[in-house]
Image (tube, rainbow, N blue to C red):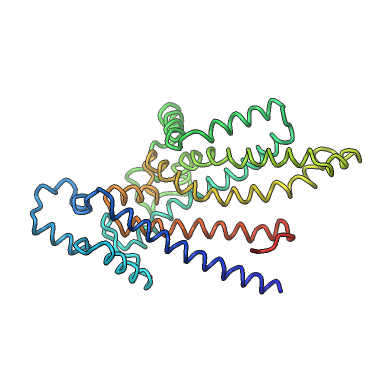
Length: 327
């Protein structure tokens, strides 16, 4: 019976993913194609004044820009159905190769930020909820409200000025020391360059988890069954351990996996500030130069990544609380 539920759950999720990707591809392709940026001028760059009509026509034919938008979309869809996302106009490489190389750099940063934001957010939320009204609760709430309303690029610039420019304890840019070959970069050098961008994303992601965890724990501590537990002499630590954690962990998991989309969006700004060569920087390059295949490929990949994270969250509920059924 349980296997049947899991199979049914998987099929429903897969169908929803296919529908989501179809909607994402249509809207993204239309919006990018209607962009005011001329893809030929963006492709040629500063040398466009030296390009004649014949050369422009050849470039348009090379990238299929001379075809109507609907024709280009169906040609692209045909290639995608065969596992080919096309060729990037900016990098002149297969889109899948560009995404794989750039995401490998971004994944390390996103993983560190995701783990830090989850652990710190849950810890600070429990601390604030357990000590409602105390000075520690006020400090945590002030931090959470301030960071929740702060733009990612502003936090990134602030950390860059403090730690890289003034204190000089962090590099000012890049994913590795300039002039060092990729195969010669050590683990500690990579960690040194990735820490500040990851810290930027994590301290912003902490806010929502901390505030929601705090509110949920306060509701639990004010419930009738906790009042009965207090009457029996159970300590605050025991109440949180036996009654609070299970009730606050589920919304924390939901917010944690939902934050994957926020991390993707934040990484675009953070990578620009720190000149970090990840998927976010490639997204900006593709948008500014109207690289339709690359931009659609990145959106496609991001949708799959975030949807997979939410699916893992649904499956995690079964481990935390088996009473919840798959749906």
